[in-house]
Amino acid sequence: MPADPAAWQENATKHTDSWWLHWQEWLATRSGKLKKAPAGLGNTAYPAAEAAPGTYVHER
Image 1: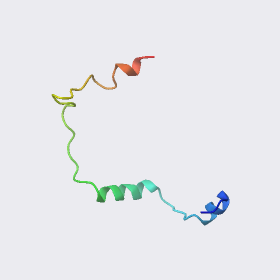
Image 2: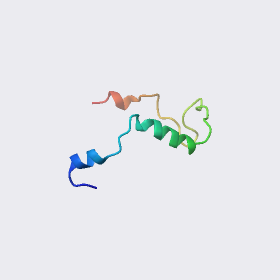
Image 3: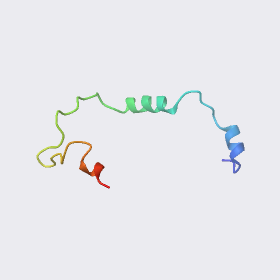
């Protein structure tokens, strides 16, 4: 890796599209099928504390 940033940029591989497209493809090959979101949050061991966004948002 060159010590000079301009030299590094000159020799860097240039891409015309967003890295998000490549990441999305990479992630899709490693992910399972989509699932529906649960109807409610929390469970008996860890109940939901309060509705979003929560009262702490309004605290100063």
